[in-house]
Image 1: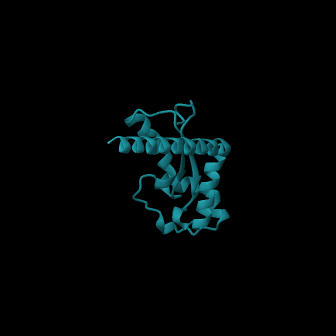
Image 2 (image 1 turned 135 degrees about the vertical axis):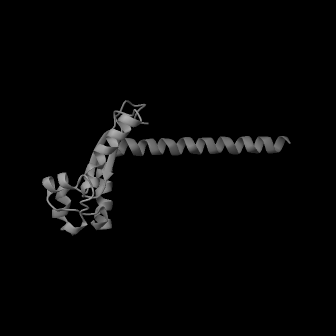
Image 3 (image 1 turned 90 degrees about the horizontal axis):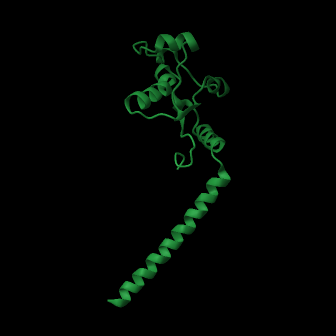
Length: 140
């Protein structure tokens, strides 16, 4: 739908705050662009971000850092020995972050209008189907 309306597709990313999780967006962009020839997609990291770790006092364990990961050194230099998994975030907080992220990007009124339009079209099609079924059933 968004491509047809000349809108840029958006990927909202929720992932771990560790070397692999932090680098995931860049890896996705590179893979989509270089290997699949897909471009024009916006990526937005919603969670976990460093602020989440402090705001929600999320547990982090330096031992969780995998120094065998080639990205670990860069991560430690940028953020310290901090590695936190997304599932450390309480489910209600994660749900709220998902809802807020979607609502922050989506025109809810336009979306609801499209949903109502779809429901009306679906009702019309179901009525037509029923009428055709009745007609075909009566003519046999």
